[in-house]
Image 1 (cartoon, rainbow, N blue to C red):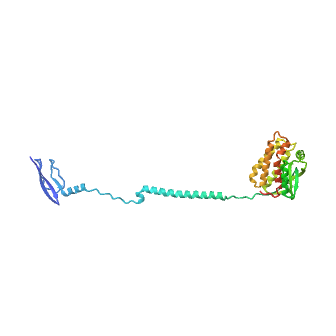
Image 2 (tube, rainbow, N blue to C red):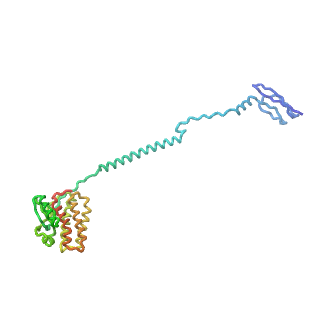
Length: 317
């Protein structure tokens, strides 16, 4: 047997009933009700109430279009954090680069200024006055003249005979000499006078008296005079080939050579060069006679004598 059921639909607040055949013989149709939900019955069937407004709302809810999300206006540095990091890094790097640039520029300017105009503190050398004993020796003189031109002509003439002469000044006169030896040496008599009878042998000296000037220069001058006398003493028959005396000459010249950087006086530096040449000849004189060695060193001996003889009593640095 067919069973009918009623459906109540509420439209605009008015409820209308519609019958619907339902296969359930034991169901009793319930009265119309205004509840908006289905009440359960013992046989499982009941009255259905459908509210049209609710249906529309549900449909509208299902069909409700998705609203586009508005983009939030976020501050520049928060929205673009990566750009912020890059910009901050660039600014920091620029500032650091500028700082380093200024530092290196100041160092470069400072080093450049030091190279161009070094700030050197010049200390005035200590001035001293010292008494230097005189040393004596013998000379072979070949001429005395009132002017340098005449003396130089005599040097050229004597050179044709194989002698290397030097000119030194004393008491407004110019003397031409061709050889020099110590007081105990026989070299001038045996070798020079016999070959050139016109040579005049005489005694001469250097040093003696008070010498003033920078401490280093005065001490160097004194040391060169003493070394000169020591070499003349070595070139005698009693001291020639004396190893201890030769070692003393070598040691003295080593000390003087270490002090040369403190000396600006060109005459003293040239004198030191003559001493070094003489010492080299003496050290390599094995197998040679005394007269041979004395002759070999005559050029430097005469050159050193001229410098020391013409050195003024007031020395310069």
